[in-house]
Picture: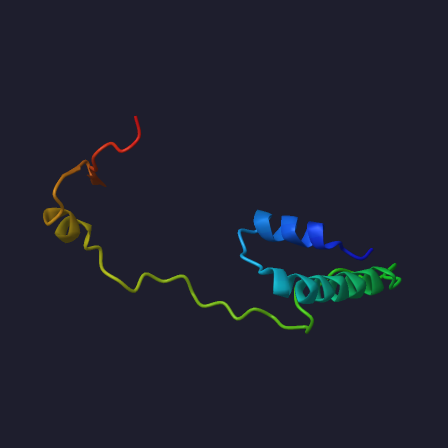
Length: 95
């Protein structure tokens, strides 16, 4: 489904993109080619194919969950303008 120039202008406005009048035709052609590729990909029969999280069969190498840093909360809160019960106090910004 090819896009019209008005649709491209509306998409650009919704995406908060500034597209000049000269670039509308180029942008429309690029979007049309992207939609054509999507249509071509949707036409592929994928029945019986399991979804994959990665295109290669890789196992995630996870590190041990070990604490490597010391607890410095007291030192950080000592220089904070205001803190109470382990929390930083900040001025109210929303009424």
